[in-house]
Amino acid sequence: MLVNNAGYGLYCAMEDVPLEEARQQFEVKLFGLAQMIKEVLPAMRAQRSGRIINVGSIGGKVWSFLGSW
View 1: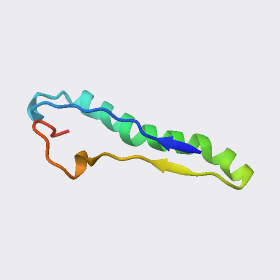
View 2: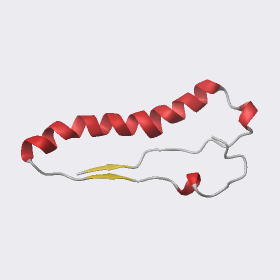
View 3: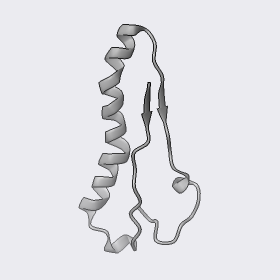
View 4: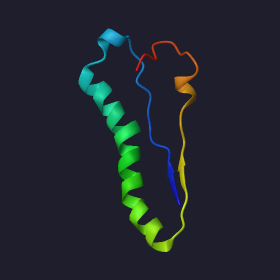
């Protein structure tokens, strides 16, 4: 079983966040999740079973002060 639960908050005014820091968030939250899935799928296919649980954030649904990224 794989539980993807990686992430962190980056709270700043949008114009104050360097794009490299924003890119790092995408690396962790999107590409990190995809990489972990790619790593476990061969074993899950070989054993013909497995479960992947992706834990998201409520941050995409609820407003938070300085939470633009």
